[in-house]
Length: 184
Image 1 (tube, one colour):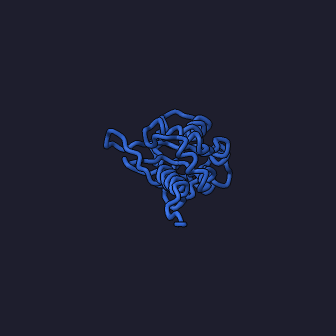
Image 2: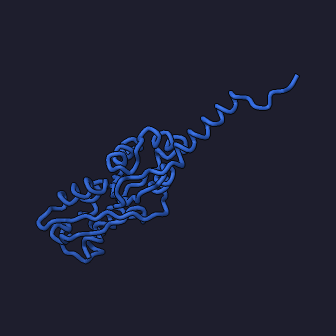
Image 3: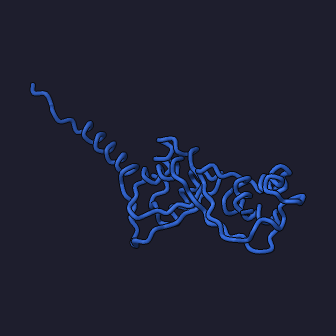
């Protein structure tokens, strides 16, 4: 009896596995336009909310495949907040690597209008960047920081200048550094 060299069951399963792996990780997401898409991810967002933003911005076209890829590689708890610019034709894996790589410095542009109080600025920064507004206010009222900056006041109310700031994520920026940046 002749042994069967070609087993259709194994072929179908192998083909399906290759197709699934290719769909999840290698397929590039293409839009009709060549313009880049900017997506802002704030602190505390989970993979599902990020996938929704990416799908709404036409960066990805299948949220479910993106979520599966993120969970397979364990990216769901590694998302780094920031403002991302996505070019056309990135695969799900490339996008996941981009939003989880701690070596990439991300920036957010924040405009602080004139006349805002420290608490209002803190709320603005919380909405725009996801920082803790209470920590920001505490730093703006921190006696040791006020002395270091050479201010003779109880807090930095009126000393944080209205302006447009490019604030970095991933470079260690915290509430104290943001206060210092706004003071100079």
